[in-house]
Each structure stands twice: as C-alpha cells, then as structure tokens.
Image (cartoon, rainbow, N blue to C red; front, side, top):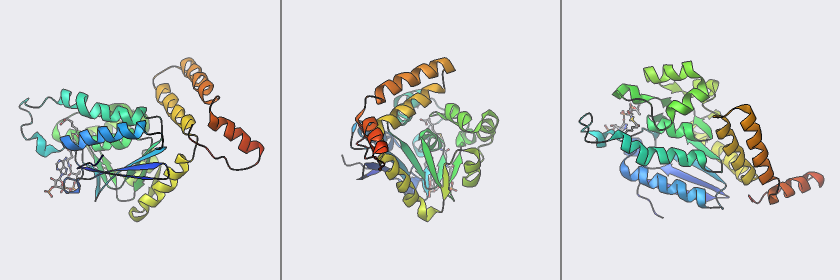
Length: 262
Ligand code: T3D
C-alpha cells in the first residue's frame, strides 16, 4: 500500500518504516497515526518480515502529536482520552506485542508521543545528535503512549520522574549510560549500524526471538513463579520448531545455522 506520510522498504527480511513529515519534525497528524497503525499491522502479519526498523526523515525521529491540530486545546473540543485509546494506544501495543524484533533508529529528537514510540521499540540505535524529550509537561500534559510504563522500567523511577517533571532533553550519551540507547553512533552511520543489527536479527530464529519478547514483556508484570511457568510454556512451543531442529543440527555439524524464521 502506498502511504502519504510514511515510506516503507523491504530488504533481506528487514522492513523499514520511515515517518515522513520532515517539515513538522514527523509530528503525528491523523494520517500519520492511521498509516503507522496500518503499517505496523502489515509488518506483524507478514511472515517475510523478520525484523522491523522505525526511523524518521530529516532531523527528527518524531515530535509527538501535531500541535497544529490541537489549536482548540483546553476547550474540550478534542477528547484526548479518545485520541489515545483510538490511535496512540493501539500503535504502542502493536509495537510491543509484535512477535519479531523492532528497532528504533533514532535519527534526531524524539519528543512527546514520539519519545514514547522510541521507548516502545525493543532496541534503540541512536544518532549522536539525537535526544529524547518527555515534552508533555511543557504543554501541561502527562506522559502518555506508554511513557509512564516504559520509562521507569528503563531508567528507574527517580530518573523517569525527573525527566517527566522537567521536560529536559536526554542527550544520546546520557541515554546510553541509562540504558535507553542500546548504542550511539555518528549520525552518518546510523542506518548502516542499524541495518547491521537488523540483518543479524532477521537471520535469527524469529519464533524464538518473538516468544522471548513476549515472555520478557509479560515477566515485567508478574511474580517469579508465574514467569518461570510461562518460560516453560514458551520453550515447549519453540522446542518443536524447525529453527530449533536447525539450531541443534548446525551445532552438531559445527556450522552456522540457517534459520528460516519458522
Ligand atoms: O493530543 C492528543 O491526542 C493527546 C496526545 C498527545 C501526545 C503528545 O505527543 S503531546 C506532546 C506534543 N509534542 C510536543 O510538545 C513537542 C513540540 N515540539 C518541540 O518541543 C520542539 O519542536 C522540539 C523540541 C521537538 C524540536 O525543537 P527545535 O527547536 O529543534 O525545532 P522547532 O523550531 O521547534 O520546530 C521545527 C518545526 O517543526 C517548526 O515548524 P516551522 O515553524 O518551521 O513551520 C515547528 O512548529 C514544527 N514542529 C515541531 N514539533 C511540532 C511541530 N509542528 C507540529 N507539532 C509538533 N509537535
């Protein structure tokens, strides 16, 4: 499907979705939200996609909600509860529940719900000039699109509250120290570094990686006993998969595995 505000590209099992409204720092208007939800669903469904990369065109990753669409703000004309439930929440849940790795290639500033989108991805490869901003407080809002759940889990409660209370930018170097960034690279190397990682993950046992993601996400919410039990359920599933058979064969034959993603 051709999109108005997104670019998509497939190569070697990796789909790249690029938010493409550079004039508005890739802020979310209604079209971009609808198109991203559609593109995420399509990537989740497509068995040929074994790793997803999300990035932005131009100097920003995403500046969150398009504030030009919120000119009547405060009047109650727009229900933010409905906006979140109808658009942002499904978008974030789609990234979190997709049983394949999702990498944010954070090319520039990620603010508001754009920051939340980056946090929702499984891994973040970050350009050295990029930053993360919990900008909600600057316009009198609370963090949304998963930020209250994701940020404290990544950086701890004290740091999360500091970032949310101040709206100060978290630079790439500090993001690396805090574990928000998995790696920081020069801007011009961002897509090469991201694709190196994405290609590697796309060659992996996708089912096992997908269920690892499912189990770790679930374990954030449950006690150890329940997490242990769930791991056993997941292992029962992947223990019957062709990729497990290939993994063991390749080990016995002292060669690299050729995982099919099944
Ligand atoms: O509404 C709901 O449904 C509830 C859900 C809300 C979720 C949210 O995301 S709320 C948070 C919304 N986002 C923000 O508050 C961030 C606003 N933007 C900024 O704070 C700054 O632009 C940045 C820190 C991201 C970048 O600053 P800077 O100095 O590098 O760039 P700039 O000059 O501010 O922006 C460049 C252009 O992008 C500018 O347009 P112009 O003047 O050149 O025509 C600016 O208006 C535009 N832009 C930036 N952010 C947004 C935006 N346009 C619309 N919406 C934006 N969010």
